[in-house]
Amino acid sequence: MLPADSELGLRDRITTPLPKVQVFIVILMQLTEPISATVIFPFINQMVFSTGITGGDEKKSGYYAGVIESVFFLSESLTTMLWGHASDRYGRRPVLLLGPLGLAIVTSLFGLSTKYWTLIVFRSLQGVFNGNLGVSKTVLAELSDATNMATAFSFTSVMWQVGVTIGCSLGGVLSNPADHWPQSPIGRSPLLRNHPYLLPCAITGFISFFIFLVAFIGLKEVKLNVGAKDLGILRTTELEDEPTPQYGSTTQYYPTISRPRSTSEETLVGIHDYDRPKNPELQRTISFRTLLTSEDVLRPLSSLALLSFLETSISVLIPITYTTSVVNGGLGLTAMQVGSLLSIGGAVSLVFSAIGIPPLVRYFGIWKMHFVGMSALIVGFSCIIMASLAAKRAGYADELTWTFVMIQYASYIILPLGFTQMFVVNGAPSRDALGTTNGMVQSARTLARTIAPVCVMSLFSISKEQNLLHGQLSYVVCLLITICGLRNVLKLPRELSRL
Image (cartoon, rainbow, N blue to C red):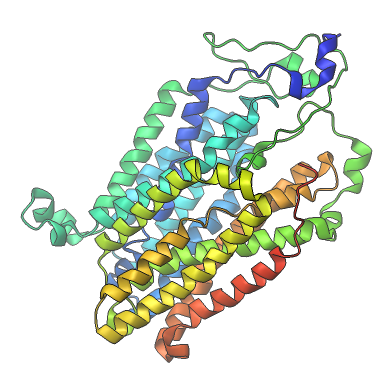
């Protein structure tokens, strides 16, 4: 039997030390996705235009740029389950190593592409090699237990913001080196003159390759401990210098779990009730149909999908609007200017998320902060409209234009305050449905990120070509969707009673 004091549950159990080196390597591998996803944002409009697919019409770039941005998330979502199955069969380590190694190659080839169809192929392959990052979350779960899992998963959202900042910086600062540094060796390089977007892609590939080397040297295969497995607890055979404490014999004893509270959206993805056996009878009754007909799950799930759609929409509309010429309804900024703006905004957002969010959540509560984060989208889309109109009136990006840009970026910093996933998990009918509920959350987010770029970028091109609402149709549609999202937020519970 286990010691009697363990009957007090998780809250009174000593926190198990995490294997720091292994957790660090797994978290580091998650950096490849946001960097490779966002490095093209500052220059994708010009890159598509340079392939000749638009026939020289800048207004059509949105159609083709949107497809390129969508196929990344589409191929990633289609291969996630395949990578997971492969990791079950061949091991976590080889599957995880294939990701950054393949990404290093295809990202560099993307930068060398001069044809639109090759951009599609290599962008799709980028998504494929990022699809194995779902395995990294499995490894984090296997490297932790219910006492320290929240700590392990809390780093995933931080790595996403760090990666976005790095990716946007690389894409903006390093593209077109011949124009930015014409007298430097880089600017005079014939290869970089013929392939102006190779440098940021090659650096991104190098980062992926460096992460591969770190993982190849330091990452060890994860194996389940038999005794812990019998207990229903996912444990690992740790490194020799970081032994794992055992929880006694394999007697059929299951302490009650009190799941730790967290304000981190990504943390909840990995928190499962490992210490308690699933109830087979209850699991059979809780199906996808049951969850989708539950208003407690469906309403916050639809709110999450809308928020993911809008966050992705504004992320892809900002670069193409800012780099489009003033004559065609943009701001006429260079890729370097856009990349600098995105990187500064990402850095400020990262600091604000770490320092500003926790005290604000404690003071105002999750529902109010979620409502503010959703409302910030109204300010963001409105400022994009006003900035483009101000630039068109002045003929260039004047002081008024930059004022709207600054306000828009101030609102953009608040966007990570979407806590919708916590409302979804709170609506789960029981702990036995948490796995299925979290799977639905991931599917809804991925689907929204897949369809958002192609939809809003197509609307962008249509509105510019047909001069619909003075070329502002895409932003107006996003504003209407935001209003619908706010209406949905008003019906969410004010308190998360089940978390």
